[in-house]
Length: 217
Image 1 (cartoon, rainbow, N blue to C red):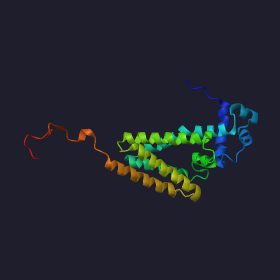
Image 2 (image 1 turned 45 degrees about the horizontal axis):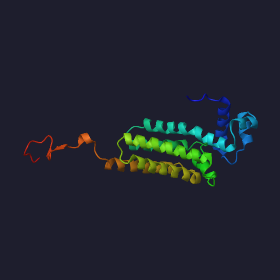
Image 3 (image 1 turned 30 degrees about the vertical axis):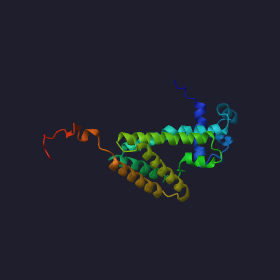
């Protein structure tokens, strides 16, 4: 059974999410989070052992909502799976134009904590990227795309590369370009995929089923 939601803890995580995403985890103090939540620092430390745990909770809280958003864009897109993959990037480019968009919170946090690979927030980021990669691989597999696991990883690399470029250039065109590249990769895999077994001619005792004996056609 899932534990009942703790409204006070959620209040703290919501406040931390707004501050950490907007300003970065290093620039936001525990005092600022408590003040944003309208609670005392003592209350914060009752629910979180440290700021590190609070940062991890902030990222953990974004895992499923982010994947749900991506899957919604994927499912809503019309056309083949290549267009569905491209739709994720198209929508990301649209969202990136919002003045409050600050890029991928997981990558930004990992960059701030690069010297601490064992930090719980870095592990949280790794879990999220893995979860997204597995979800995407499952979708690609269900659409009969060849090598779905490797392709999903290649698409994630394109996405994270676009996010990193955005931190420098602040230009959504990089996300759009990554989407075109991802769609091209999908098309290539679709072209090399083997046809379904039902569509391939069956052979029995060296003779193709469906042909008349002695037929050369």
